[in-house]
Length: 197
Image (cartoon, rainbow, N blue to C red; front, side, top):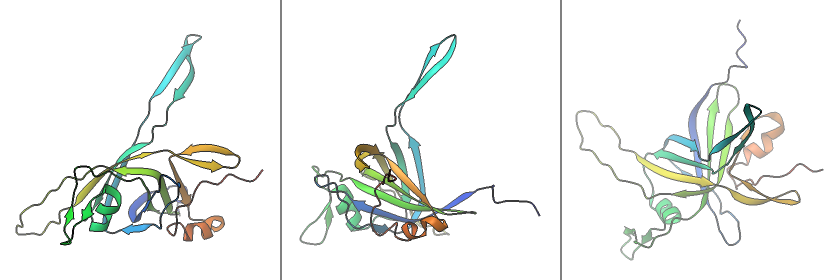
């Protein structure tokens, strides 16, 4: 039988959560589940620059400017619009979008499955753009409409050991030595922690 354990394939997006970030205290709220995750794509942002010397590439620098991405979901519930985009609920219960609404930063957590070991991810400092709305008439077959949320993920500063450092994201692979942390991953946002000296 052929050995397949080194052939890793990733598939399946699930367990998408957001946790609002208090910019004053730097603390996160308890993560909230986003139901109906369909697809996520991210693109790394930042330039690289190659310095040439001795008739060839000598040194390469790169800037990590985070990521831009899209999260496609079945629909956005009212609380998500309030928590992340600054929408408001009026006295009639209608959700309204003020022109001065400010998108609020949050952590984005999610899970990607694998044929070997699943992984859980967190982007630490994310903001959404206002979503566009699309609706289609029904035909012979029912095709659900989805909502695509454009987002930007940038770095957040954490105390890492004795230093203040910037981190954009983290991921945790399910394994025997990470089982406890993995099981609690969606209970609260897990900051990066330096290994003790």
